[in-house]
Image (cartoon, rainbow, N blue to C red; front, side):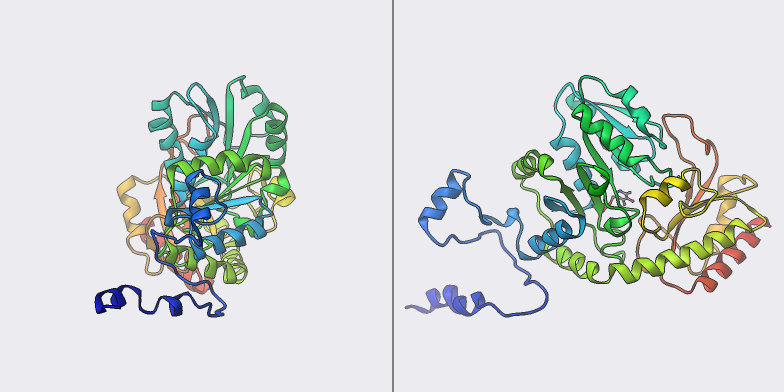
Length: 386
Ligand SMILES: *Cc1c(COP(=O)(O)O)cnc(C)c1O
C-alpha cells in the first residue's frame, strides 16, 4: 500500500474501538458508513432503521434524546439548534394551508412572530387565546383548528393555563395540544401526565444552565410522533454534537441546580413583595399569583424566573438609574443560567390584560447568595427613587 493510501486509512480500526467512558463519544460526521450494500439499498428506499447520515443525529444527540424520553415519559424526542427552532418545527409539522391554530397570548415573543410573520404567509391563521385560558377554549375551536399552543407559566407575565382541562378538550376535538414547558422543566411539570401531546423545552435555559449553549427539544406522545418525525426528516435538521453533550451533562445536575434557583428566587420574591416601592410580585408559588391554585395542583416546584412591578411608573429612561447600577444582575435576554439576569419592558397582548402600559421587571435568579442579590436590588431601587 502506498503512503497516500495509508494516510487516508491508517488508524481507522483503532478509531472504531469502543472505549467505555461514562459520557457519550463526540462524533464529527457527515458520512456514516453502512455495514453492507444491503443496508445502503434499504436506505435508498427510506427503509433503513439506523443512522444513515450526519443530519439524522449522532451519538451525543441520540443519548440526550433518549434521556429526555425517559425523563418526560415521551414516545419520541428530537433536538434542534435552539428553542425557537424546536418551536417553529412543531408549528410547521402539524399545520397545513387553510388551518387555524390557537396560541396562548403570553407565549415567548418569537413564537408569536413566527406565527404572524411566517405561518401567515402559508395560509395558516393564528388566533391568540387569553393567557389564563381554561376549558373555555372549546368556544374557540373551529372545524379547521389543527393545533393549540400553551406556555404555562408564560413569558414575562407568568399566567398559568388549566393545562389538563385544555388538553382534554383538544383530545376530544382532534386538535394537537402543544406546550412550551421551559419554565418548569420536566422536573416540575410533566406535560404527558397532564394529557398534552407535544412538549417543548428551550434547553438553552435550565437544562444546559450556563448561558453558553443554544438548544431546543421536542418530545411527543406515540400518536403525535410519526407526523413530527416525518417533517423533521424532510428538513433534515439536527443539533450540534457538543451542545447535545453539554445538555446531557446538564441533566445530571439539573435537580440540585433547580432547587437552588427555586429557593433563592422564592426568598427574593417574598422580600420584594414587602418592599415599599414594589406594587406586585408575579411568582406562581406565591399566594398572590392569580393562578396560584393551578400551580399548587399541577406543579412540583417553581423555578428561578419571576417578575415584579413598581408602584410608581417612571419614564422608561429613568429606569436606567435602577438597571444600570446593579452590580450582580446582568442586563440581558435569556435566563436559567448560574448568573442572575434582569430584563425590563412593557408588553403587548392581543387580549386585554392587567399590565397594559406597565413596566415589568423580570429576574432570573442565579446561584449567587440570596442576601447579596437582595442588597444589590435594594441599592438599585434606592437610586431609582432619586
Ligand atoms: C428562551 C425561550 C425560548 C427560545 O429558546 P432559544 O433557545 O433561546 O431559541 C422558547 N420559549 C421560552 C419560554 C423561552 O424562554
